[in-house]
Length: 494
Ligand code: SAH
Image (cartoon, rainbow, N blue to C red; front, side, top):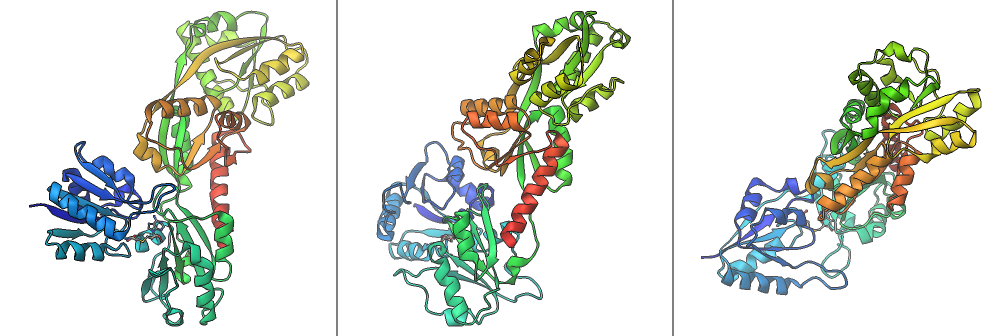
């Protein structure tokens, strides 16, 4: 005997399906799904499971409810265990009740499996509790449009309820809904919020009041699926979870960023690990460094400092052999690393970029003598071209390469809300790896980077950085991220 399970898929985040729902997906012979149910959930099904899509396709209309009923009926004839997967909870505005009645009339055994409804979960994910002691005693879930496309008539009543109002399917009628509520006497300053693609990495929230929320949502470009929340609970200062940041960096930098960012309430996921690999040239570090004509040694990254001193040590050289040399560093990170070897940098530019290192160095150091630059193989020409133009004698010594290795799968990647890059090589490694290994992943989320070189590497690959740190080190980047997201919230609330 076959059986149809009307399964709630949850609000968007694939982890918000119930344990029972997931088990049924794993076991079923056929699954009938539509647009709202996360397609990510289909990975739980067996390879033999027949997947039937009944949602909207680009350029086509969705199937009618009658067609869906017919598809279910046919599936029940052919397969044993059928999952009819429905977004959120099957019995909340999903026409799940109609499907249940149809199956019952047809004598097809069925069972409804509850799901987490977007009506409660989406506001929650945006930090809005639908009830709150002392603020409201009830919440009401309302459709933004009725079957015939008109607004529900009882706005007079809704405006008097005093509870939180949650409108589903109301994005296109947001202005009308707010207008009606104000018309029936609700204060125009009543707090309101619109949340789209809630609980997914693409979640977007706009906060405002009945008076201005429509304009704000329009300016923010909020699209469907979205829900509207009206009530004072929208003004509570709850910021749930914190942003989920994906970091591409070496283990060393990632650990540093993690500490800095977690302190600020972010969740940090290392998405791509950068490994530092010594080049053959690295074997020449000792020989090159002790050359008498080399008067300056210039570092452009903490990695360079680490590899350089590791090679010196391996070569059995005492640090005293460098006592005559002077050291230039690109920024605070390299300066700190150098201090670990008991050396205080003699030069550091005001701005932490390759270009600034070059220009400020040639401006302030007269007759520098020969400059040795132990750095990454893919080091920027910005530095060397400035040195060359100033007639400096320098030697570029590529002592390491960086290679990226993806540390997470598509599923985890999907959940990243902001990708953080600290080097141009990291940008390239990340996208190379993603293209090679995550064919089912569609890049999404915001992008933050440490400085101009990273920003340009992103641009070259067709991505725009949403945030470029003004101070180009881990602390600066962490501070910028904190400020960026704090301001975003304020702006939306104001
Ligand atoms: N049965 C579903 C609701 C189906 S009606 C449930 O219980 O959640 C579809 C409407 O739900 C959409 O128009 C939108 O208003 C809302 N919705 C569903 N998922 C959403 C999400 N992730 N973010 C915002 N709104 C969502």
